[in-house]
Image (cartoon, rainbow, N blue to C red; front, side, top):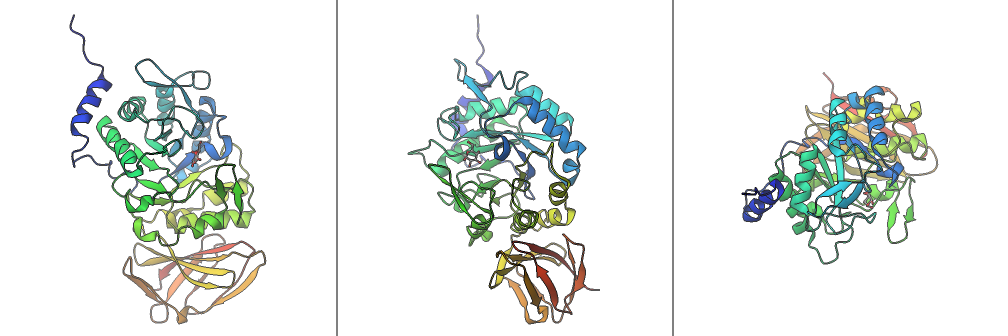
Length: 406
Ligand code: GLA
């Protein structure tokens, strides 16, 4: 009897023939603006199951997160069961008894997309089966399940070349044929901003975030970083990001223990630097104050601006720093952040500044071309013909949107 080759094996054979061809590309158009969604890791770590994912998707629809733009529901580490004797990966059957295809159908039925997690090494950071040696097979499995997003980690990769390993997975995704956003998570170790533009849709620039304002937290074998530490590690990276390829400052910790002002500053910074906005809190039960921050349309619009240019710090005065982000339509966003633990009065003379961005070739000369501004957090308005007078709370932020005055 003539036996047909399994589909995945045929695809592997084909991919093997063509994987070095220059035509293999990441899928375009998946992250024209930074991706927005939710991820299980920051709150649930390995304690995940299909009911949590379904309830999260339901909550995102009900509480307006979906309408605010959060699209991806991402399962992080520890969903895995074992590989079968053909090497095909299966989810943990106790935690995901209905299987991933059913879960993807459920999430899609709510108008959302489903993300999954794997690792370039033989084991993930949580000790589960990684994709090393199974890249094409796993990409096909994920595509068959209906996955829309792959976060690809970097544990257990000793001796692997990062650009090579991530390119292999990119090619595997392309050959599997389903557009899946490819989120590179190698923590900035090998400067992915220099090689990943055509490989992934975003790349982590740092180690893991930790919900503190300005701390380094030891996780044993590695450090996790507070909001300011991650912000400071973005220096010199803005020119590498743009539509379809973003610097990823890691998942948000809004609603996970920072003060409300700190949460607003954190969200403002991720918005200004055009980082993916992937929520890390439990969105099924969050206080109204957290919900207000995460759904602030003005802050999200700054992050999602289609020009896709990241902000830069143009002025630092003691604890206060000023960041500018050019926006489409001749608009700007301005962030005034107080790093310090005391409230600080600011008096900013717009007329004294000629903001000039070599990267986007955009300039703003407030003296001759005045702008009207609105603070997206307070709704306060003003214009650049008068000094900006404000008291910035401890660890707080003003986030202004500027439009040319007519
Ligand atoms: C690494 C990643 C995290 C998370 C964990 C899962 O630390 O950087 O974002 O995915 O692994 O084990």
